[in-house]
Amino acid sequence: MLADYDIQKEATLHLVVSTGVVTYNFVYSSAPPLGAEHLAHLASGSSIGQTVTGVAAGEYTIGFYSDGIVSFSVEFLDANGTALSVVSGSVTSEQMEPFALRCTAPAGSASASIVFATGESEAVFLDLVSFERV
Image 1 (cartoon, rainbow, N blue to C red):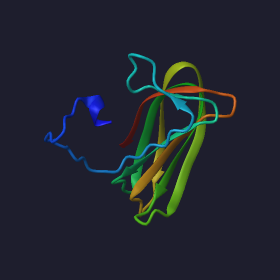
Image 2: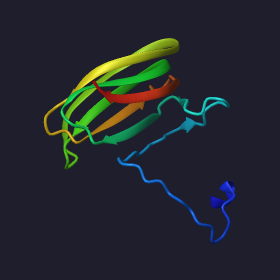
Image 3: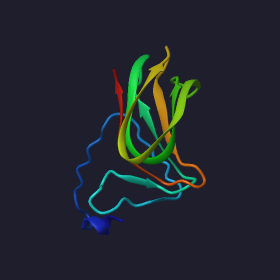
Image 4: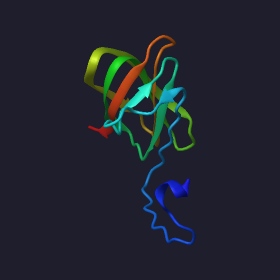
């Protein structure tokens, strides 16, 4: 609600529009603990995803920190949203650890759908997710 940000009636808002489209899908996830603004806590059986636009053919690295067992997928899509390829896997850690995994966007790629998911009996902490061209 606008009132939460102390925005008054007839106030002038200055919006900054960034390029790209970012969408999130939170299912059964909770708010991050205090002091960890970018930390996601995914409850068991939940997922979080983001669509990254402006992707071209080439090598990319998906990086993140996680604590627990998390599955991930990077699906490369063409300009029409048709899947071209998918890279998937899972990682396990007993504490917050960094992971960096390479993947290749095929010719014709325009975007990538990145999804992290937990199993039915496993929760996970996820932080500092990055997706960068190598």
